[in-house]
Length: 170
Image 1 (cartoon, rainbow, N blue to C red):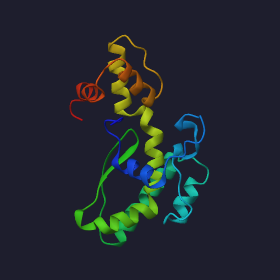
Image 2 (cartoon, helix red, strand yellow; image 1 turned 180 degrees about the vertical axis):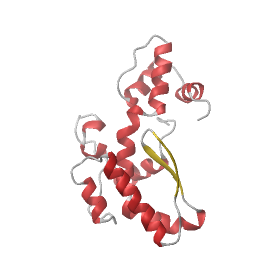
Image 3 (cartoon, helix red, strand yellow; image 1 turned 60 degrees about the vertical axis):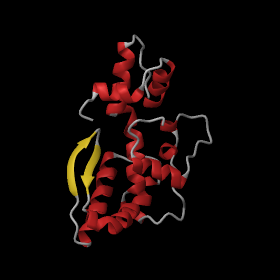
């Protein structure tokens, strides 16, 4: 697997939507980070509006999360929010809310969340760990997580071991 800690949700989005890599631009310079939202996707007009300009701001991300949480609250469930990591909201949903969670997540947050998380990957702990391991080997880390991962491969450095050594607590 190319990434050690790729969010399952983001992988699912890309699997469902397909990646729009029709140009030679790096993914970070493509509209919606290479994620294509189908026209018939069952999403709210608010979520579609956020995605219309091809970017997601932190304010838009936070507002989309609040709409997702409110959707679950209407069904009587509380979203347990934890500290954010790399400006990505960490949260939990009761198991009993799984069907409603799927519906609310798709309608209000899925695509915004995927684009936001993709936009954060170059500043993630994973990207930072790659930089540490490369620097320790005398290699100047490149700017993006993807490029750093390629550098690790070329230097025969195990990405998973690198991450676990730099961040032993996960």
